[in-house]
Image 1 (cartoon, one colour):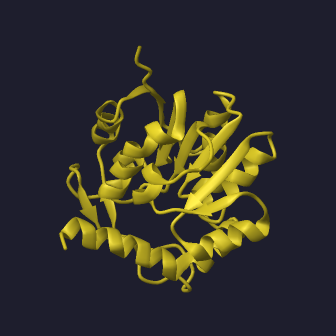
Image 2 (cartoon, rainbow, N blue to C red; image 1 turned 180 degrees about the vertical axis):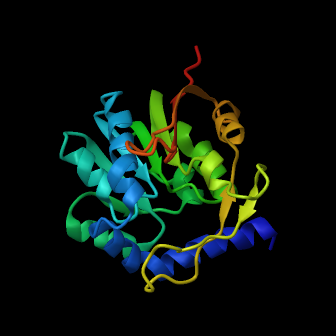
Length: 228
């Protein structure tokens, strides 16, 4: 097994272990940056293209699908963690088990106006699998939205280069354990993924905290290329 594969497995194992603490943290509005900035930022970005249908890749406990469904969008959430999907379904909505590596070969019964991955692209190979699956998921000209930690602020004191980083649950409750590693990408590397997988990069947004002005996340908006 390669190091990349081992790290990808560690991500999945961590989320199996932390599904319920995570859902409790979201329900309890314990993630300050999400409550202050990033939740509304991704909702507003997606509403800007007026989608009728949407697939939320890495939907977790399902808050985003429920938020968009309340605003009239048909939403399907997919995730690889059964415990998160169980929580999501109990709260209401349409959710389906699917690993990122299976997205391209899974028949969802339709193609979507847009796909969203909100703080859910943590790995190296798994992220590329999501991008690679988009032509099978999106309608021609469909949009893809990625929200992730802003590389400038998430880099910390480490070199500003792509590579695996160890995760941390600092600031969360003691219920969390076994933090997931994550694959750090520079802003330039994130942007390069779009043309690599036949997406036109339309826009980059950098939501900031209303009080401090600090960058809270990076949102990239792409559109599936249509060829004649």
